[in-house]
Length: 571
Image 1 (spheres, rainbow, N blue to C red):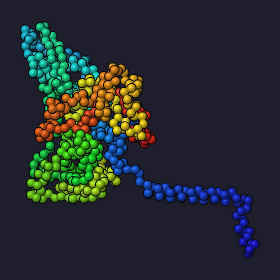
Image 2 (cartoon, rainbow, N blue to C red):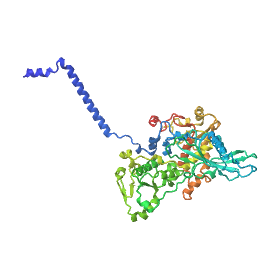
Image 3 (cartoon, rainbow, N blue to C red):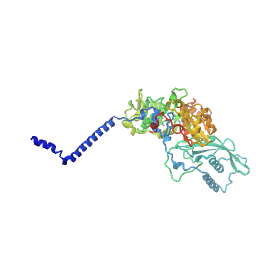
Image 4 (cartoon, rainbow, N blue to C red):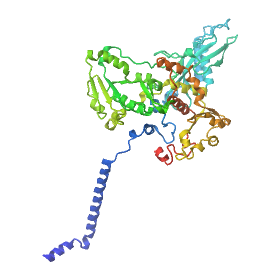
């Protein structure tokens, strides 16, 4: 027994069986390693929490959303990107601009149609009043505008309107800069002084400044044909684009009747810790609410009053009483989405709620997802947020499983067209022919521990040396900077014609269109051109430069967020 047992135990180790045993051992080892690897991966997957950008400060949220490797200025913590920044420019639509040859052809066609007429009608009366409706006057004004402003493309001309003097006509046009990068159109209207010689020959004596032709400002009515517009041969899908310079109608929407109000479904957010935070934080939360309202097919009841964070104010204190319409395009929002002002809503609610049996569904936990509310029949869903941060931030509603279901409707929020009109005015004064440089100094330049080279690299001598290979001598150069003393950059004037935002204060002072319109919007109380507005304008003018030179990566090798952060920022 013992002998046989010993032989049976050692029989498997005979030479002829060694190869088979080795394969079995290798197979068992590989399987063991595979099982261990699966267990380790499962444990990591179950316990690992990826870094959530929503729990960062609001500046990190914006960087997460918008940053690109070299876009140091675009991801600045005081600048928020809005819907038009994410729109791809329709190159086909922008390609159908009006050339001088189009005007000549139009004039020849008009002349052929009027061969039997008496022409301009000035025979024997060359000193008489100028008829701005005369096709010859219209053709002359269009041709002169195209030839004068060589850095823009014209897409539409409005019919001329008589000016205050007998020899003046006002004309409006829609345009884009030739090298424009944003998906937007612009509107300008200028005053033309026209001379008529004794033999009735017409010539343009002068063209006024940006928005000087106020008699041609009136917004075109729907279905009204423009004076002249060139269209492409194939119809393009209609895409709403901002038209900077048009008259803004951002009056509050009202409900037409009691019946319409009672049939409506509404969503409102109340309370929370989002107030007086940065504009990035505000917009991130507001778009969550707007996205939920659209998902639920409800009207969003919104508070148009804002609290401006102290990071934007001259008093360095949070300031209540600001208006959404100071900073964003409410006309576009109310036309593209269903929204109501909360004051008007509560007035209507108090009048008709009991009478019409309107009910309210209260939600006090942000973890109640929009999907769970999709079957709610009550007239009003009220989300009420508490006082404990960060659980009382509105954007928490859109986290987790909701993130893949409720999309933030970025396309509904555009920048204020009043502010963008100031941007357009500045660019127009520079004839849309300038380069721009963003120069970061301030606290970063003083902190040599994190930015050891920034102060030296942005000194006038260093800038002259760096820019000489990037910008041609004599060019208009717009400098966007947080350096409060712009005389610091005076040495650059020997090579360039430098410009700063403060040169254009007349565009928002008490005699400006912006001042008049915002004062009226604010019920007669003048509106301060605050720090956020200023940086918004500064940013947008910078972004419209033909060449755009950034501070980090182009003027200095220091990292935007401090030493040893360049790779992190780029990723």
